[in-house]
Image (tube, rainbow, N blue to C red):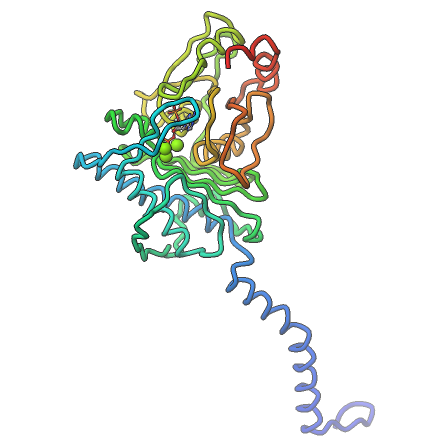
Length: 343
Ligand SMILES: Nc1ncnc2c1ncn2[C@@H]1O[C@H](COP(=O)(O)O)[C@@H](OP(=O)(O)O)[C@H]1O
Ligand SMILES: [Mg+2]
Ligand SMILES: [Mg+2]
Ligand SMILES: [Mg+2]
C-alpha cells in the first residue's frame, strides 16, 4: 500500500517506466545517432588523433627516405623548373615516402583534405591504416581530446624536404613533414629527421616535445637562408639588416625552422631568424609555422602577413620566421621600400 491511500499496481509502474524510457529515447536518440553518424561520415575529428597519426606518417615516410638513400637507389629525375629556373628534383625517396605518408592518413581518414607535394601516377596500393594508439609522450602533453569539424581541416605533407641536398648526400638537412591546419591556421606541426630518428612535434594551445633556445642574439642576428633556392637573399639581408649580418646557407625549410630551436644535434646550425625571399609552397612551411606558433614564435610573409593554409599551395610573399625576437621590428626593417630591391 502506497502512502496517502494511493495504490500502485505493478502493471502501472511497468507502463510508466516504459513511457519514461520512450520519452528519454525520443529525446536523445537523435543526438546519439547523429553523433554516431557524424563520426562515421567523418564530420568530426580529434586533433590529438591527428597529431599521433602525423608523427606516425612522418616516421613511416622517413624510413623509406633513409632506406633509398642508404641503398643509393634514388632514381633521380626532374619535375621541371621553379619560377626562378632551379631544377625541381624528384627521387624515389620523395615518391615512396609520399605513398606511405599520404595513404596512411587517407586510409584512416578518407574524408580529410590532404595536400602532398608529390602524387602517385602509378596508384600504388598501400593498405596501411593507423592503429589508433596514441603514444605516451603525446598523451602526457595533450591530455584530452580536441574535436573539430573535419571540413575545417587541411593536411599538408612534404614527403621529403631538401630533395636537392638529399641528392647531394647532405643528409643532415633532410626532413619529412606533416602539418594540420584548421580553418587555414597552422595547428599541428611535425618535422622528422630520417637519418637521426629525431622528431619535433607541437600542437598550438596544447604543447610540444621541443622548446625554444634559452637566448637569441637580437643585436647581431645570425640569419639562416636557402642554399639552393637563394635568389638574392644575401643582398636582401645585407640591405635590410646591415652588411655585417651573418648569413648561414642551409638546405630544407624544416631544417631551417629546427635551427631556431633547441638543437637535437650539437652539429646542427643554430640561427636567430629564418628568411626566404623566393617562391615557396605551403607543404614546405606549414609544419614549421605550427611549431613556431605553438612555442610563441612567428612565421609570416616578409611583410608580416599571416599565411592561410587553405586553397592554393603557393606562398609568394617570402618568409620571415622568428622566436623570442621582436618579429614586428624585423618586419619593419624588411618592409621599407628601399629594401624591396634585394628581392
Ligand atoms: N623558389 C622556389 N620555388 C619552389 N620551391 C621552392 C623554392 N624555394 C624553395 N623551395 C622549396 O622549399 C624547400 C626548402 O628549400 P631550400 O632548401 O632551398 O630552403 C624545398 O622543398 P623540397 O625539397 O621539398 O622540394 C624547395 O624545393
Ligand atoms: Mg619541401
Ligand atoms: Mg619535398
Ligand atoms: Mg620538391
